[in-house]
Length: 484
Figure: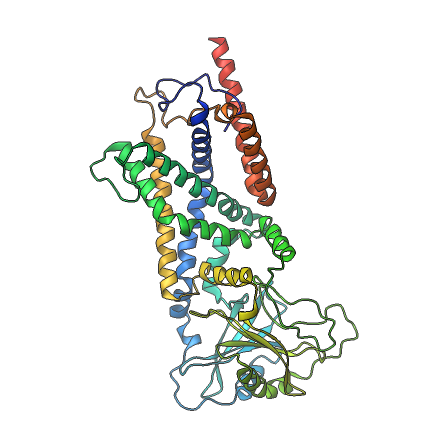
């Protein structure tokens, strides 16, 4: 990785020429990068993997922990949605009605959402109503467009920023930024080693006859082969939520017209585009900044219109579980959007003008750009929602596998330590690989690194830091050698 040669290499270093030849320098450069990234970034990946394992099964944990809120033992004919919402309004007359998630299956409760100024960003108060008795059964804070309840929210924020707020997001973005580099780099190195062995080595299975470091390496490489697709997927989807790279991803999607379409809920025709994939709470669209906007009708009157609004949306083709966002003013329509649920592959939405009993705008998933569809599926899969228990199980296995691969990597580092006890861990791979590349190739590598580092800023900054430390170590090594 360094532009300089390491004259301090000893017989305890891995077998390599003192100065790498050009046909080996590319592989040695990748090996040194993989080594440094694995050692220094792996702690962040471990935290992300462990918290991610919890996050993967959080939807199921949520259903178990909050069963008394989400389900009811009542049987019979559900009361009109208007009566259910009215019961919630009676329970919380101090708050502003935001949205409703009607019950669709026998035994499920209806969730009535309120804007609460005492809550944090993207949080709403959810009052759960028994649809048969039209009586509230409890209330909890719901977070984001997924409607996560407190347990899942706590796990999500642990995974996202360790409960440290915006500064804590650096950890998760750094992990996501390097995960794909480490995974793909490791795959290339493992395939190169396999090809060099001329069939004597195993690519995707464990050689149980191997011993010592070779056995550890075999475990590390073979497991990586099985995990590679999932790891790259987690890295890519994780970066879409990140602070710095996420902004670049959003700008790229906007430039290429890959953004997620949204229904226009503004009756004046002047509202901006609605919320995107990562909206924390897909509530009602408003004519923000318009001081002359007419106030919305009283919440009781809005509740009375909900049955008709839902029926219009159902007739239009919105048939799955939905969230009905109530208008914030008289110039805004109701918005009926299919929520992210297990096996929900096509979230459609419509804007309904209750005054005229008509649909004024639609957003059909079938008409979305392919990139927007892939983004939606990727987000739902990353959250453990797309395929229900199946996706949660696979994500859990992926997280456990990542932890195992990382620990095997650290084990190899320890097993490479010199036998004379001069070092407690193994040396880094030989230096000087980049300097030994053909000039045109070396320039190309640098340009690619700069371009990727610009698009994924934390990757670029940390890579520059690795290079700086590497150069300093090389200078110190040369000074020590000169004094001997």
